[in-house]
Length: 545
Image (cartoon, rainbow, N blue to C red):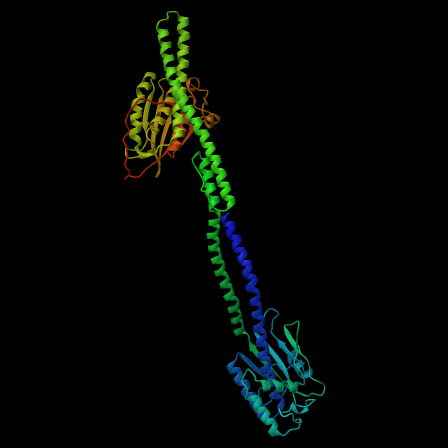
């Protein structure tokens, strides 16, 4: 859920960022293209004006202007005469005077703008402008500020003055040069987009005489660099903003989902059997309401289960005394009866009382195990197993059963287990193994190191074993198999084993033993060498049946 929230947040920021930056970048790109085209067209038109004067000083001024333009800008200037074959000294003839752009300029008087590509621009911008003879332009030139008019037939001195004023401008062109250019071509320059990436400008009137054409080739490498800077800066900025948005989104998402994660943790603990799990009442109103509802339900369930456990424990404890008294009474009756039939009936009644006593004891042990989980303590596993085996060997000797201890775990192996839990686990497992083992059989107890954080205790018998279905149900309460223990057991022994092992953080599983029988595998958590360990104390066998 956190990942989805972060992705949604970053996606929204990305859409908003794209909606803001992409149009701005396109606008700046279009503006860069328009400004460059306008500047180059103005320079080309100014040079065409100088070419149209026709005299030597104007051509020399044009040559100097073309040289300065090539030195100070990434552009070059080409000039073609009206016939397209001869040069205008001191200007050289263009290498390609017969191409389409020069043809449009010399034959139809059209100004062309070619960017070289439909997509943004090509490697160079090419602008071709026709040059008209100044003395033959239809219409008069504008006069000075006093309102006087100057005829087109002015002397060379006036023309040279105009030429000098045009040539003295910067490479960017001046207002006077642009004004004179407009007068020279006889109207406003207008451009229309062409399909090939170029532009065409309206031709001059029929009375104008074209004396040549000026072409400016402007390399677009600098424009491309500026374009990359425009888009690159915004791309880097967008990546940075998205990264910040992802970080902020992760923080916000974790804050928003924290109440849900707390509820999930509470539900997981509750599902694992921890009925004391509660969720903090935090977050928005909806999650607070949900947390309160779950806490109330958990509280009621915990109360009901606790009441049930208390009832089972109390009932088991209270039943032990009358069952003990009943057994003593039956023993006294059996001692004073000579009739074999009556004695047999009394012995059957005594066996049932014993079974009921074991059942009550198992219920009491299970209720206590579920009611309170003791803190695990470091215990020496092999020493504890040896002590419990000493207690159970006399009972095994009566049946002719041999108990063998094997495994690679030494006395240094220590495990975490609650006080008395591992003793009772061994008592229940050994009790079941002893009951199902045939006379003169063997019970193998194996203590091994299962890994850096686990020790394994296995008890293998030579009894009838269990099928896969029986192994799956063996840990259920009051379930008894079809073997020897099914006739006398209470069905609580393995349930108690699983409860105690699980409380200590371990695992218990059943599987077939090699050569027949059943293997009970118990995995226990181990501790480090520096942990304090407790030596077990021997005691009487304890079994829940």
